[in-house]
Length: 168
Image 1 (spheres, rainbow, N blue to C red):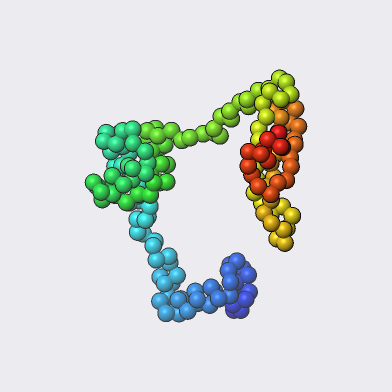
Image 2: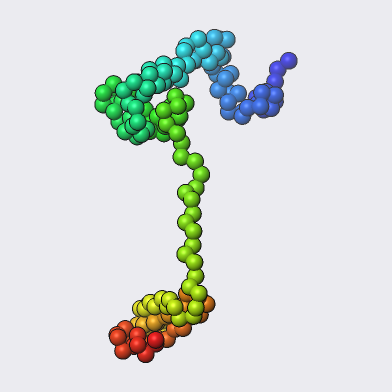
């Protein structure tokens, strides 16, 4: 029974282009050509596993108390191992020589509000084109009371002691 490329592609869950490529490979080299080219060879990851074990021994003996980024630089300079800082961080965590930072930093407690109106007033000036491009830059002087959050603001042409006192 002969299959069309489209039918074979459906059966193999491949594209017709990939099936055509496999057919060409089979015609040129027989069944052996269909075998994966890395079959029988050691994994590319094996080198990294051997290096990992060696590096973890070095971490416990030579590089105690040093962070992953600096250790990865030292390893490249001193021993010729090129390991990214992120990989180094993972290896250090696995070797129990580095603890990952967990969670968010603790939030600070808010300062308690003042008890009485007028006890603490915060004042600021903001220079801006408040009324559009066709008007000059205007100063907004604003004050807020800490106890009640009452806001008071006025617009002035200049920011000076006189205008601040007038707003106050």
